[in-house]
Image 1 (cartoon, rainbow, N blue to C red):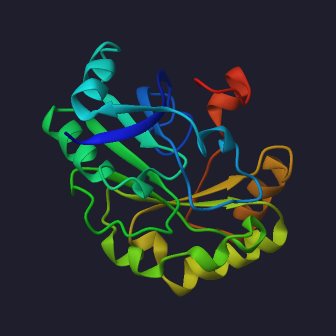
Image 2 (image 1 turned 180 degrees about the vertical axis):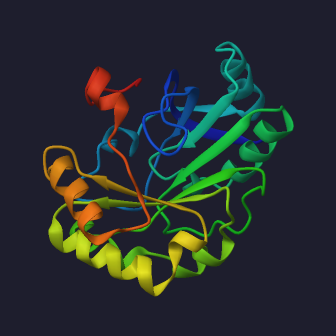
Length: 213
């Protein structure tokens, strides 16, 4: 029986991506091979409980939501995540996957919206970017840059241009909370006419940085 270690399953509003504000069930898997400087879910590095895919689906069903997000940690660090994503799609949910961009996404079900991070220099994990993942993206997917400072912004702008990312899919620029001013990021994007969507984390504005939201 396929098992996954689950840190938490909860019902909230999607706080990021183009689906921001939509009622969503979040499945947070335990474990992550990265240690980003700004990580806000370090509590998911360890702990959690083993669940079968059927048990996970039972918990998701209770919340009566149409949207499901599989997140972490890094969900793809557990090999059975691929099976979970497929099963969720088979059950009729609109599914998104939040992934660090450091692990291969080529086996992810094509029905899943992949939200792929590109790690910046200030994250401390820029060397972990698996650039071949960009070839696996389609127009329903999204690329996210989490930015710590202006140097990160300049670096991300160059990557955006060099890989013509806005032609692949929606590109998100997000400031690290309490580190980079959202207003400064907005001003830079407008000044440089970047073809990106700026986002702030709605769930943190509403509930703060606490588990379960």
